[in-house]
Each structure stands twice: as structure tokens, then as C-alpha cells.
Length: 352
Image (cartoon, rainbow, N blue to C red; front, side):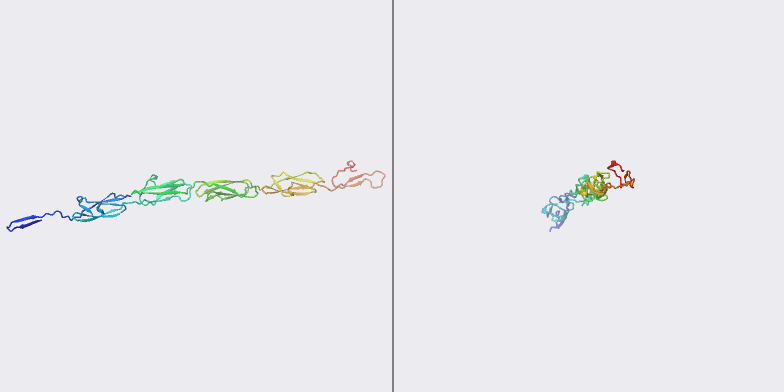
């Protein structure tokens, strides 16, 4: 600015005032961040003043420091002033800090007992991740029970895991046990029952089979996992055939004595259940006697002894004469009309 002036003698002059140190401009701050990418570490924000000489601007807070370290996302306002007293503020904002580990869950294509494979899939991921094992795949196939841990990392470098656990693969065939209603010789039906060392086993035709005669029967079964098997029941102790025997006699011709009937030629081992257990019976007269017996299985048999050749009745005969009137000659007596066939035991066997 020029001051113009005139002195008493009429002399004029000029005085120029020059001021260059008035500064009313607020410094222009620039915020610089250590990173703006997702990170799981601290982030440092620095305020600089590119258009101001070094030392021209002072930070009024933050202990005079032009840097602020964020340990978590948030805001911080730097307050500053230049030497002219111009004050300003600038706010640093950090949103890229991520120190939370990513999460995910596991889904399975099969969740019931199976004898096949089970595929585990990583899903419900909390954020974008990169799988760092399993060749980067989000699926893992179990061919047997076990565990597998997916490992992954998010863009900030936080690491997470999710463990798949499969316990329902069952490739073991059920162990079958067959029991019988009886294992002793019998003339009754035998029931075979099959049981297993695990539950939820289905047997085609049911868990029991009734044998009405000796033979084999094959149970076919499948467990809940789909394992199939067979077990054969064998019964060879059913005997429903009645035993047989024959009767022989010590005398088979006509006699006036006793006849002993003997039970023999049994078709199998037997026990005589009458006659005091004896296998002989003595006939003192004609008649019948029934031997009763049973085999080891309980089957009942019988054999009838019949004797009709005992004769204890004395024979009779009559005598006739060739001459019945008084005679001085000989008379021939003849034995006849025998009650049965006879043998004359005197008279040299003659009947006259």
C-alpha cells in the first residue's frame, strides 16, 4: 500500500507498506493409510500437508503426532493449526480391519446309516474365503467313518476351520446266531430263530422258521446300512416215524405147553413201556398180547403177539364093534370118531 504525503515546504513523497505474512488459508490435509485392503492387523493413518513447508503445521491433539494406529475399525479426527493460527480438522476412517475368523458349516449328502460313501460339503460361509487344503475343493468324500477338517482363510488373512465328522458308515456284515427250540431228538416240530449282534436287521420271511421235518433253511437278511448276508439252519434230529418190531415164538407147532413170544428186530432203539419192560411174554393159553414201546424221540409203536396153537384139551374117540350080538367068534373093536387128529400110542399104533 502507498502512502502519499506533502511536507510544509510543499515537497511530496510516497511511502510504500508491503505485508506478505498474512495467511488466512487453512492447510489442506492429506490422509495416507498403511493399507486400504482387508487386513487382520492394525492400520496406521498418517496426515500430511503436501503444500505446507515442514514444521509449518502442528497437530493439536494425539500428543502432537501426525499418525494414529487403528486396532479396530473406526474413526479418528486429527486437529491441526498452522503458524498463522489457521485451524482445521480431518477425520481418518478405517473399515478394512477384519480380525474375525471366517466360519462355515458342513452338510452331508447322506445322513442315515449306509454302507456306501458320504460326501461332506462346506457351506454357509460367513464371508468370501479361500480353502487352503483339500486341493481347494469344498467337498470331501468319506469311504469310511472318520473326520476331515477343512482349512480356509478370508481376504484379511484370518484363518478358520470346519470339521466334518462321519460315524454312520457301516460296512460290517451282521453276525448271525441261530438257536433252536430244542436240540435233542424229538418227534415235534423244531423252531429255528435267528438273532444278530446289531439292531435294525431285516430278515426275509421273518426271524423264525418251523421245521416239520429234517432239512435246511437259509435265512437271508439285510441291515439298515444295506449289508446283506445269509445263514443256514440245519435240523437232523426230528423223528416222527413210529418204531417197529417183530414177534418170534419159541414154539410154533401145536402144543399143550406154554409158548414164549419174544419182541425183536426193532427198527431202532426202543423202550418197552408195558410188560414190566420185558421183551418176552409167556402164553399159557391161546390169545394175544400187545407189546407197547417208544423210541428216543417219543414215537409210540406196538407189535401184537398171537398164539392159537396151544391145545390142552384131551382128544376123544369112540369104539365100534364089528359084532354086537352074542358070538362064539372074535370081535373086532375099532377106534373112531376122534375129536381131532390123533396118534394111537399103543396097540402098535393100530386102531383095531
